[in-house]
Length: 194
Image 1 (cartoon, rainbow, N blue to C red):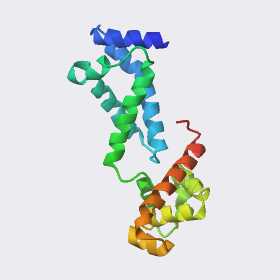
Image 2: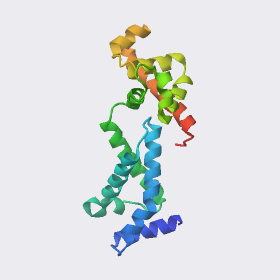
Image 3: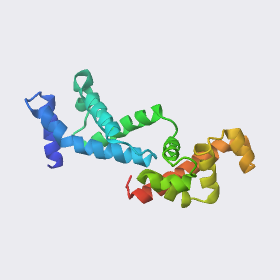
Image 4: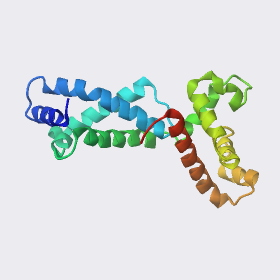
């Protein structure tokens, strides 16, 4: 289907043409799922199918609320997939705000490791853990260390500051920069384009 076909399908939905909404859902569901998975991965989260389905449902529900207000707000001068991408990204950010910080998945990945195993020994337990470990290994040692202290050893900012011999007030910024660098490494390893 072309961009013009997408615009026509949106118009058919808005005019309540029988069968148009079903066609709309079947046409755009794969796009929303792929975008949701990509946006979650770019934010350091490895979603399961249920999470992606939840986001899909929320995106489509948001389009139908208030008499299809968001669908009516679509400007046909632009590709509908671009508009759908914005709506999907917004929903993903809502999901992520309800979750732990960006690298909260490191805690889950570490928990999958065999009892008594360190993060690198247990990393082979899952594909996600292996990708995160490879990304951590590609970071500067200080970046990897601050992330491991926070998300593997669960140290608070005061403890991290003492361990790294830096002011406690700079721990947040240090973590933020390390997370951004890790996300860039993850993007490269996952072969994703943002």
